[in-house]
Image (cartoon, rainbow, N blue to C red; front, side):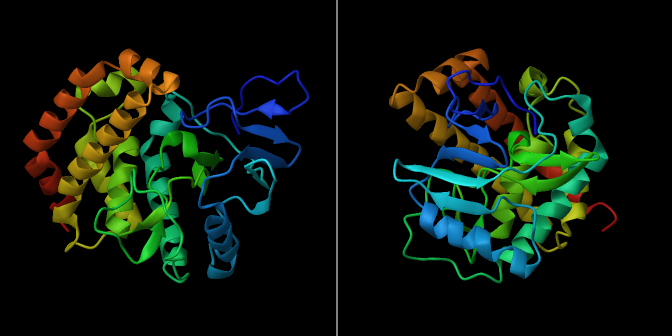
Length: 275
């Protein structure tokens, strides 16, 4: 896994990547120690159930500590950090993410959702759904081995939803479904997004019937992402405030949403061509 500096205070090796828990995630040997989400008990039960359903690409919970933290097994491999390198933007890497996501969904569909848990709603499917979705499969949350996606990490935003919502959220980051100006800020080698959405859908095994809805859901998940950032800024979160300014502020979000709407039909055509 790509990591940051070694912490000199004896707390372990600080792991880089992500905004929500920046500076608070440490590796100690084969264990990752990090802030526990409020749904940790239900989430740990779900993660422990995945291997028996055929999915081994997630950390295994070790324990919850008494100080509001959790420990999970360290997942070895490579994790890309922005600006994302060329190796993580290949078509093969993209397809491997789609295949792994389908495997996760197929396994999760066999596990009853704990409906009593207070699952986070910030990036979750507003329609709800039958299985626990990850909701944040960005490059920083995918572990690669030998150029292929091998595991997903950081399930903090997992919540019940439809598989198609999770796929749309994944497309935002991995295609990426970004206007050209926005894409170049974090994806210097970002290729043509239209055939790449098709690659992701094909690798996932998305049915022809579900394909026309995917671009509209990408727009909806993008709006959810904007609302997520809005709440972080309203709480004066310093990490999100800095990132928001560096990435172009609200002008970036306005440009992106307009571009997605203008290109919706083009995305649908790419998804349906010769299927």
